[in-house]
Figure 1: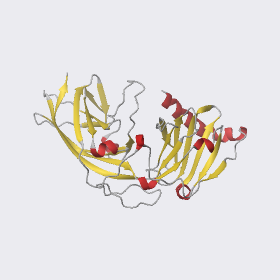
Figure 2: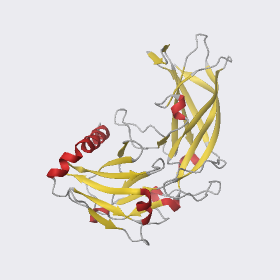
Figure 3: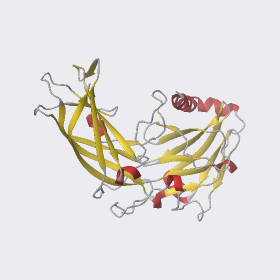
Figure 4: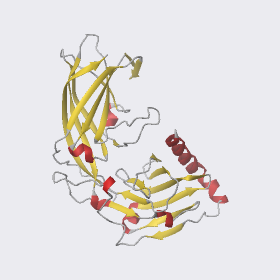
Length: 318
């Protein structure tokens, strides 16, 4: 619920921005020029360090462009799956499916433990142990066609409803909804496909230490750096009506692979909610107590790994 409220506040602010600007005393944001030598670093704190294995593709990509289109060969990773029948109905393409089958596949270890995002999911085969085909209805919360083109950031924090993390700590979970055929079967005989994992490119992270020194009271400050200026406009905002929320606003072109993180004074990554307004604006809202000694990380690109999978004999839980 807090993340939903943050996202709603962010969207509400953008809609009311012209009105708010006429009342707030900081309508002309300050500009901060970041030194060329200090913000771009390759080291990370121990709790957030992502190793860069030799198998990752490392072709240079200009700022603002998407990740390389030729993913490297994946390293070893483990898969474990579980399945259960859901109660109720599922409606898609004007067809109703009763009691669909929910399959959760955990990818852990190797490249999965280092991934920041996953996506471009293609399910190539789904059959029962009797050879009956299973229709793919949803991949995570998206139709199969959308899942082939999008990415999701891996969040290891607890779900606010279940109070449990959705993803395993050393990887991520892929959830697939399948139609349940009328013919009885005991197992999903095979579930196969590919998923693209993305790790942060250490050469394309911009870090800003102690962002509380840039802005601590309600207001807006434009962040300047050659890499950010090439991307577009990046601003840090604290709203008078939501002082416990910090917003990073990115305006520019080719923002698909741009993400933002904030680590607090203890190097804990803060929970966030992101939203896109068209193709040229991304908002990242963070719940914060204080920005003193907090670190802002602007991720300008990823390295991609395409991982094939084929999970067999998935027992259906009763």
